[in-house]
Image 1 (cartoon, rainbow, N blue to C red):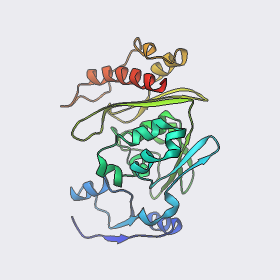
Image 2: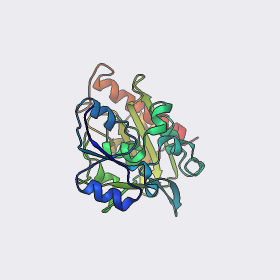
Image 3: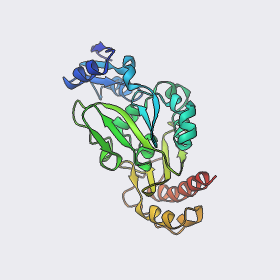
Length: 263
């Protein structure tokens, strides 16, 4: 590690001002601290968001849940409100990492980092959520822009994420046993705007699959996905799985997610 300044503001306005001047936001630290130890990230100043109450919490707004950016994974998993309104989101949060990671990691930190194998991005994209920052609101379809890349501008801070409550939804994850990231994860949802299918873990970042969405729009059943072609051309191949195996897992996990959603 190396020397850096540490600040812990108590208000959102103070945090926004400090981050806007070039300081690095610290949420749960599950990614940032590890990258600092490896000297992949060397901020001069860390702004710890843990003391900003305005960034925490879960509330119902009409037909949506609004979840604060620094709400921890375990709080989402254990929330009665989330379990009642979007049980798939609570179940997803309960599968992230291990107990220690869930006790420290935050929703906003995960979505801001946009790891290509993270779970939360699939829920944000699969539910057609809206990322609320200190400057604007960004639709999920516009937010994710590739591996570790988002629509966030320098100094822009996620305040909360608004999730429309779906008719049905589920998340199925084939996890890498050591990291517990998704080797392939699929979030499916029947929403007011139609069926959405978001896939994580395959390579360049979370994405929607038009073929699976079209098939499930006709018949929201596990059998409907069996004939859908999954192109593995841009998927990753590594020591954990080939691109072709990841393509196969998309079909398997989508069918499982649909079966879960249908109860």
